[in-house]
Length: 306
Image 1 (cartoon, rainbow, N blue to C red):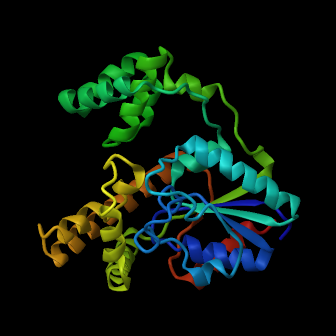
Image 2: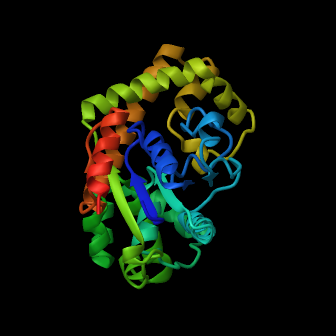
């Protein structure tokens, strides 16, 4: 395979890391993280970051590079990723961008608007309005100033609805207009992408089993260490799936089995949201539907043939 940029997207537990490692071995590649939680150093197990043994198999970039107290934005990740991609290209190697954060892939392939910083009071007011109005009324109000965002943002996606409104309120320009004024970070012919989209029931079973294995491997110790830092609960890593549930167990509020069950439920919901994103935002990307690693690789080879 000639050097290029591969983008591998998909939900949690779908096999992205294993596929990227195999591709890196075959294509003299280097792996670049596109998962917003795996940026942080604090929760290697709970965020399913590659193990030290996996990282030793190929160069890995942007994994565990941030502290939990440091909130990375999509724009910050994009700037860091482009620097890494430029360096990989200079070495004549294949870049493999892998992860489950859809906004990161959209920033690479469609662009990221250079939106001015939103005042804290505007952000707080937008959150308060959503709480008071409810999603339907809030979305209807957004549609008056940014109808494209109101149509595009999925049901239940409070974060992006609030973001669209706060941008409109602060800048008097629709978020959709900001985004339309930007170009992709990667040229159209510079990359190829695939989406892992396995059977949902099989994926959910793997999610459940993997989270139970994480607990056995020491994920509770990670959560205890993070909780001991008494960080702002609004920080990105504090919202990682499992943190709230296992922290409640560590405080003696619920049993471990109840915490695990709740965290497994939230993991399945997260996987569902990721799959909904890729179906809507990456509809034209080729799909890998297998879950078993060897079958995934065969599908990848078939769809990546010239």
